[in-house]
Length: 138
Length: 138
Image (cartoon, rainbow over all chains, first blue to last red; front, side, top):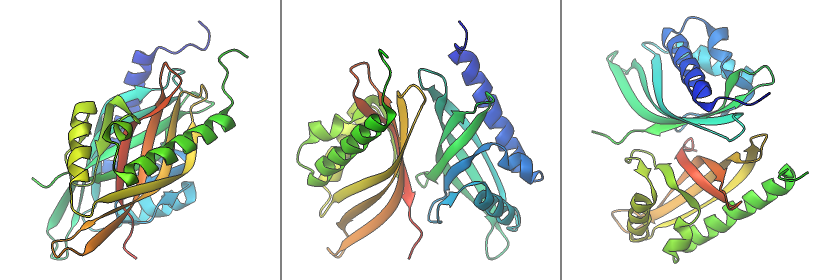
């Protein structure tokens, strides 16, 4: 049994961790905590913006996002699929990004997200790839 | 050694398979071959369009795409990362979609794509998640 993972327990743990990350990001206060959920080599692909690769670039990206007037992001994931060894997983989810428009009125964009997570040598899950795009307009 | 994969060989094999898929898709002639590269439960998330889930919905999606005047898609992937057991992988790549605009002039959209692949019981790689979004405008 040694080294064998209980995938159902791991799924609950990963979805809980993702929810904690979404909460930290939506609160927008603790930069280091927000950054700690990504791998050092993580790739983030926001729609129509350049790819952000690695922790240093991500720090700048999150810092500048948090300075946008009215900025808030949150998300929730509804599906988690694991590699047989329980070391990789992908999550499907939805996100909501709000920021003030040119006239100061908040504008909200809804998206669908895919994140890929890797389990580190310390057993902790971290996000290695983060991409989203727009939901269909209603 | 039994069951142990050579990740470098598997990377070459997966990138080759992805390239064969891109070629089949860009030729746009063999619907069943194009569909054969997805898992039966694959999720495709095109920007601003509803999610397409499963083989039956994908068949309709590809059929209708191939009927769009001037439609052509192609892509190439530049990075492949594998789970330790070699049963999951994600690819990062770029795609190009062309179709005729309202005036009949071809319009091209460039995107960045993430695909997640699973190795089936038959040893073959199939794409389970397929999402892309727009590159930054030049």
